[in-house]
Length: 239
Image: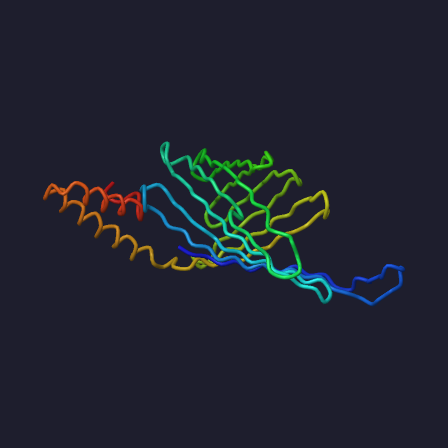
């Protein structure tokens, strides 16, 4: 699958001063971030998902502007252990460069995480980054809604989410940030291809059928490849 994200931050009305502390008028600051991502599942192992993302951050301060670019890589393995555990590893800004009058670069950072589903509606997650900062979270789902509590070095956060019309989601979080104070985050998501589940199931069935035929012909290598692809698309197929 693929995804996209657009972020915007802006502030205006700042009063500029020169080296002699004389007013030079007002100025504004803005940041615009764009992220494009692609993920694939079942290419190497049925339970392995890999993905990459390309990001661009455009910054503007008064009459000066620049752009920062980065490339992310990530992988997830699971679920396993009775469909309860997922493991993940990601590297942000593995490749980075800048454009414009700046020497800044988006910092490279590795992160490893794990999630454990205690019971069907209750999910626990934890991850640690290259700075050894620990993050954790709890999510409890009931129907189309969910409640969440999270911990990060910046502070605690609480929030929730709602899925509607099968493909759309609304999420909100409130965090007591040590630098910004009480802050809120609101996001609206749309899942492309949410109505294509039947099409993917048919594709998995076709791979499985091909694999069974190859087994009958004793073409074990081709059979293993096609059955792995079927399981990568739909892990419950043939069960």
